[in-house]
Image 1 (tube, one colour):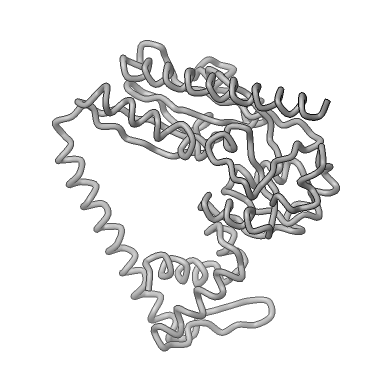
Image 2: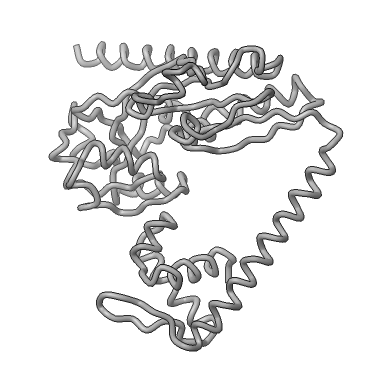
Length: 319
């Protein structure tokens, strides 16, 4: 039994709905149902009474829920203790905070951290993953902090903090959202995918930002063929590579995660994704922040150059 399973049980019990709990936990409804059934078998107690429209706890389930919450609380306390011990151990080091959007976490971030730890061994680096919208609206930038971000253009529009100059977004590279499909999919040979085609295609959604993107593109058709909503990027790629669904991607993603089993195709609505750094004031960056900007800018220039060469190669093959 995993701690995650206990958390899933608590959310289902609190919400009284498998589907609502699945949406909040970014897991498929079928997957959550299997987890709950397995959980009941493991502890040997019938936890829920199910009907066609609702699910609610049995009297035994109420007892188990109380115990489950105690376990969750103890688990959180354990993690807090570990964080406290690590903080105490690292107290003799200067710290620098780097916020990173999910795309940056699995693309540029490993190279950035490698270079920074070699160049600044006296620093402790705190890496915090945040969605682009959260970085734009909610992250409080102070001294010794910077964000490396990939942000869809519509999240930038109307951002008051950008308009007021509260934060600065330096864009070093821009590309477009594309659709990632299995290499043998009929869509793989298309020069462009229409929104009508996309609306009847099973989609795998990588977290809340992809969900916002899908809703923006598909409107009322969103979720008609949704496969799963997950924060596990490896799972997303596996589902696509096995041909079960399509997903969203960018040139930057494919530069770092290209697979021979997949192909990516433009969608007939251009949605720009801008990549770069966000910070509050130049003087707050310090030596480390300035180095982060330099590394990110250079890395993205290499990606841009590689993608331009690849695009020219494709054009030459066509003509």
